[in-house]
Amino acid sequence: MELWPWQMIWRPKIPYKVNCFTWLLAKEAVLTQENIKKRKFQLCSRCYLCEEQAETVNHQLWRIFSSLSKIIWVKPRNIVQLLNCWINIGNTTIKEERWRIVPACIWWTVWKERNQRCFEGKKNNL
Image (cartoon, rainbow, N blue to C red; front, side):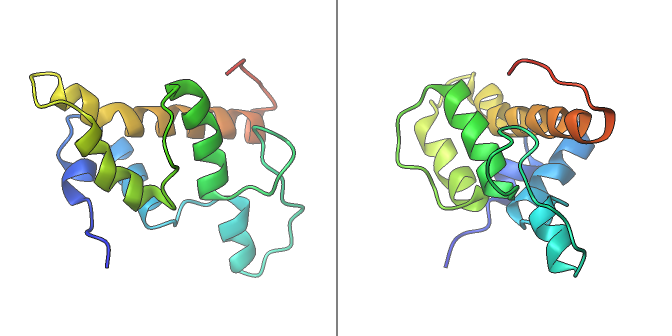
């Protein structure tokens, strides 16, 4: 059984709405097209970022995260695994607090870009 990474979600000093969003990601409850389909809505599912694959929580975030971070590692299966291992690849100096917010900052930025493409038809270069 995986440990729930509550410290990585609720302890970093980031806006509360970003903490809540990270919690929803960890629960895989963010309203991506995959989760909307589970509620019996008919959609043509495609990722708004890559425009190729179906939009899922993990696909969308990993693709951008891995290209931005330039970290070479075995990709965790899900958000909870990433949060559990993230703290172990950081350092224990004063920068630790900043290191803890990196995943949430990237995910929040990706989510805002996704929503801008989805609802406003605007694209930024990632």
